Image (cartoon, rainbow, N blue to C red; front, side, top):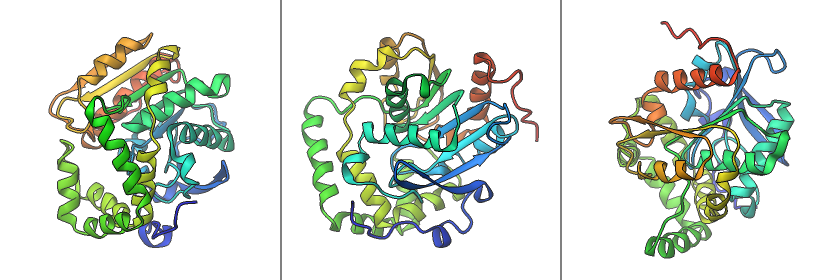
Length: 311
């Protein structure tokens, strides 16, 4: 297991967590998960939407999207292993394959079969891997990715960043230093702005709460150190479900042009561009994100009508 460090604690850091009333703790894949379940009860016949956040985030990333979808769909929003309030697994299970196995195990534990799976950044890669390896047991009718991080660093960058991530993840001092710096609200605001996004004060506060805990930072670094996207790049063409790639054209974390390269490898793909939004586009424009997901649900037969978003 990774060193415990200072993990975010539910009673301390989650006291007023977004959508806290929907939170529960579930055992799956040998881990205690924090997951939020909203909308009609599981098994009611309502379509299920699974929302997966990206590296270094948690369920708060979907804080404004999930309640809109929950008017007509059952919405599942977990913290990934090692992130937020979910338990941290051994280091080797924080890679892409391990995360995909964990997500499928969570779906089994909750007895849900997502109609539409939605990922942000690295979350899209996790869902792609889960679908490719899951067979009929995990087979959403559609996949949506917001500012999806699906390609590894290329060229000389790949020779530098991967070893650096491994070195940082193995150094117990680095997470503590990063957490100390993250206690500064201005530092978190700068970090978010460097991705091309501007989010609300509540979102900034949630990121600050997470990043000032060395346990969360340590798991994030370990995930980066174990990340291997090359096999996914070779196999993503086998995805049978339609894929929508939403791109914030102001994203400075994942080059927007990469979406075109991804779409070329997929059998059924479309690109939706959102001008002037950054890497956290779904947090900047949650209504638009919910509308797009609802439209996809209607298209694939998950529901007859998009949710009433008035008010």
